[in-house]
Length: 191
Image (cartoon, rainbow, N blue to C red; front, side, top):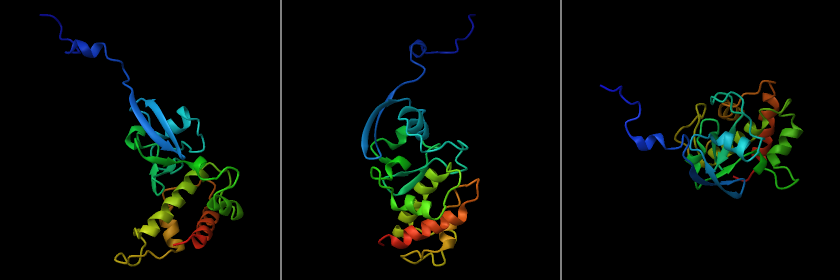
């Protein structure tokens, strides 16, 4: 009796190891049609394929928040845990998409004014997370520290900022400056 074949279907032996899946994403306002391996994370797509290196690869396990980007302008995700093809047809904003040319986003300016960074490695993820947090507050999404879960409006507080930003780690410990920057930016934003 012949040894059993590891591959029962001979057509499979001729299939390429990596099948390409066409994905069209809008990244930082630009439509990007790419043939992408379906196993490529959104983080690797940004950094390795598009050379948008602002978004950082810290832990590559979803624990540090350095890879945080925005989807559809308001939902923050950890791009190291997301496959690029999951976001086909969606809009992704990385830190490179926050500024308008040479004019910094107001939150970026607030980070500078409040020393919201030291080494800067976590800053891109902190910025995107803070903008996602602001969108959550506008939508009335409660957090663990929200006092009234039934309220339509979530009251802004330092506790809310610290809780909602707790998934973004800063090894340098610039948390006070980050909270101050986010607080200032939130106070200036229309509700």
